[in-house]
Length: 239
Image (cartoon, rainbow, N blue to C red; front, side):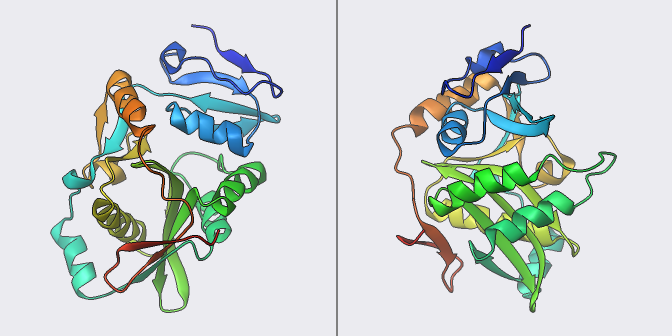
């Protein structure tokens, strides 16, 4: 199947059904706010950059977590019972992205999170659409994750942990809070044992597209997020 080249002057994507078997749909374009929003609205995301060109993906199956299917294993419950960590939202978005960028990824060298990715997603953060979860041990940032919130879908991007189970704890806290806001699903993009252990599963691209279609009518919580004392999300108009 052909891989499409995106023109920076034209804000458009080919249909996600035209992606190759590995999920690659298009190359090129930019990481402007409008292009990133359009991509996520259509189930497309940029995975990495090579020689100044961005690679856009729409994999099939799509790995997602339905919030009501979140699995919290006994070992994680003890972490919450012991109050091992504390949590915040949107207090250091770029720092979380840079920590994700510098975290080793198994056999992969480097990271797809280049400076241009950090700049692009930080612009979405300032618009009140991209959010970070921070996990703290005292004064130390030991874990976190970031993603984009549109309608009732949270599109997860990356996470990191500098302490055992820190990223899992942050993810669990986020999903529990999204349940309170009646979010429909969390997009995990690709299969990983880490997310699968928390309840993520694969659905077909067609099924995922149905959720995206319904999501266009849902209200987007725009603004800066924070946790209250019950670890529920509160939204501020401040961006």
